[in-house]
Amino acid sequence: DNVSMIQEAGTLRCGVKFDVLGFGFRNPETGDIEGLDADLCRAIADSMGVEPEFVEAISANRIPFLQEDRVDIISSTMTRNEERLQEIDFSKIYYLAGQKILVKSDSPHQSVDDLVAAGVKVCSGQGSTSETNLRDKGVEEGNLVLFATYSEAAQALLDGRCDAVSTDDSILFGLAQQNEGLEVRGEAFTEEPLGIGIKKGKEDLVAFIDAVLDQMAANGRWAELYDMHIKPYTGDEAPEPPLDM
Image (tube, rainbow, N blue to C red):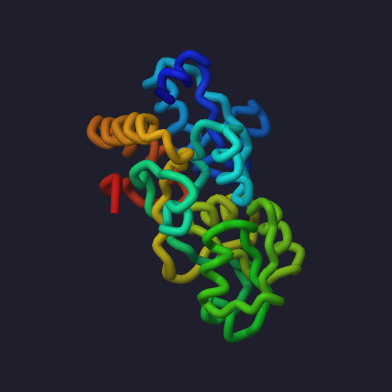
């Protein structure tokens, strides 16, 4: 089966983001990949008795990487939704995010509706659910500025190439932390349940990962990781792990 193939290979290849604080972030000093997504990979690899190997997976290449067997799993702030479930399988939900907006502190805009009404440019991630949600919210094609990574989108906001960045709050909190003068605003206007992506036809791997997530919820490890990686940016106490919706 797929789990024993990974065990024979000795490594679990995990697709993660390298530029999202709190989830998947390459520490510039140590080169280590840090965050909740990275630590979930480590926990799964540990349960299999193998080493994790981290591969940078930006929004647009996450599904191709699975389908081409470039990685074994994707743990990369990826929303589980009906559309993606046609293409790949997902684990249980390990984190519930919601889409908000990131603006400069002196911006008059408080919500995505303000951005639509003002007809200003909004930055987001190429191939992300956030991009689709912004179109659904009424952001015109000419006002949608898309980037491969969210660090580039934040830079565009700072440079004045757009008036806001909009994606999951889980990503925006880290960007606000990294960039002086940016803040997260508005109520979440979507629910973004994050799951671990797995290529179709690997039911044993899905079951293995779900069992690890259940165990981490039960023994308090999930809450520990939340407190370590998420709470510094949101200030929120660890909720009950969502572990499905």
